[in-house]
Length: 248
Image 1 (cartoon, one colour):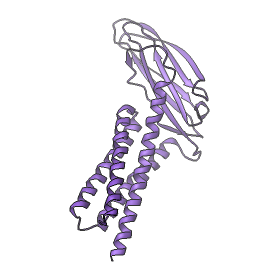
Image 2 (cartoon, helix red, strand yellow):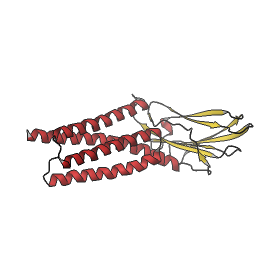
Image 3 (spheres, helix red, strand yellow):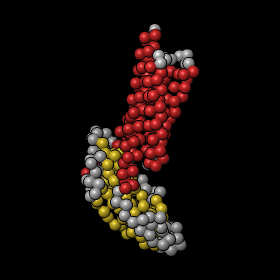
Image 4 (cartoon, one colour):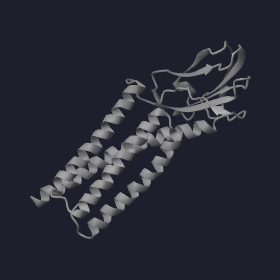
């Protein structure tokens, strides 16, 4: 019975770790892509960011993606502005750039869109996009960026890949944690502490993954650092517990 519990506990940790690793890799990839995009073709200074800019998180090698951004004239008279778009062209330093002139009536909002494809990806993995709207009173100078992951899974769509990653990651964390708790009943004080650490770690990974999908890369980067540090703490805990002969 003790051997069975030991194996069950070990398998719980393995399954939980796989779920955690997949979540960290996914959130880390989205954070990395958006940090690289932030550094892409910085160009002219801007007053504000484009809060309406939307980009796909991920596309596969068989599909294209659409980037959109909406611009509003808050003033009481028509205004003409120029929107400059820079998209990576196969390399980080190669840029496909277009200028679009738009006229906005008082209070009017217009949405522009741009198509990106796997051929645009730098290093065959990341598409970088920067949208810049020139200052045109009362409109401030605006800019927005995003990094779009490209994965070589031609039989799926980007949304399907994201769904698969989320399901595997969350299912792994939940199933692994549940198996570990079941194998260590009744939980000792030490194991209750371990359970709390694993629960917090799972929550951070899930939140970090959601932030990556939403494109909130700055907060996601902070959470990613905290998550990695907590992973180190968790591994250290289990190693010390094992060396001391404690049941894990």
